[in-house]
Length: 156
Image (cartoon, rainbow, N blue to C red; front, side, top):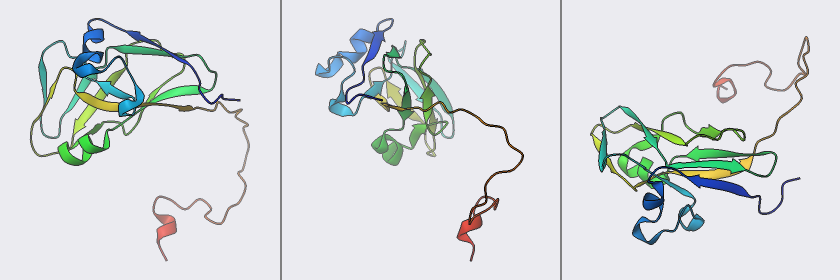
């Protein structure tokens, strides 16, 4: 059973402490939905139109509650206004991963986009991640949809 407030340890790496305490923020907090910030070695980085860039976050995490994993989501405003989204849709941080969280951003716009060290680039959310018992079988149970492919239920 997951408690109301599962605990997660956070480790600030390299010079990331300065990044996470910039602009009055004190570490990773939920005042801005658990925003992940760019922990760039340089002051600034460019993502060409249609290009991707792996951006270090300067943090590593350790969920202390079993059944919890981290998920990196796009920031809605960054995606809608700048065209910068998490490249793989959602980044999954496995509960046993202890390395630095890297966010790969995809520039879906037609223009180069620039990021500065400390910019909010994604949201880090912790959610239940169930491990199930897989049971091999010869056939699966019948449903109304059946095995119709992508878009199958939208055709009438």
